[in-house]
Length: 270
Image 1 (cartoon, rainbow, N blue to C red):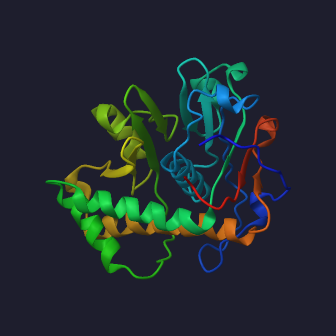
Image 2: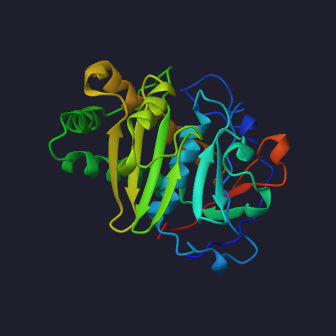
């Protein structure tokens, strides 16, 4: 799937609010996706699958409801990786000339059920992990969208053979397959309901892992993890459906005024 150029419109995050969820507007968080934009075909990952788009959309949703402040997605030209952090690019990447804006398209009507279905499938097929199975059971038993006042930190990773994307805090850019004890401690320190989501582009599957040790996990914390994810996804879709006739233009903090992410609706994701 190519990366089309979306028509921009001036809808700021602070003008959007998900009804019946959180009372405050989405003014404190911003997100931006970066990749070469001059020629979409030149981007090494221009064959974006719907799994990639869902992953980026999920990061966007979780970032908007994160308590950690602004989250910035960026593409590093040297190692061909997408990263996400708290906005201080210089601390991790250090080269603004290696960063480029990108536009991609998302279908609001199908994004939410696809994400939920992928996560539920992955949770159901998890082997020998009672916490993942407990999460799957909670997904099955919950028929409404619970409102959670507390929000957790999330590290989202995408793996595809030798190419590897890591989404998460700039303090914890490890992958699920190479987490050290230090990485885990950093992830856990981000919030009481820290979690890790991994998407595999080859077979469009999703793995969910809890960053805390099993001894720290309770039924209440598992329930909160589910609430965090569901709240975020519903908020994301509601925002897009509120702008059904035009794409949503997300603005970044003032010091990154030249970088932007535009989301436009399309008929299909893949």
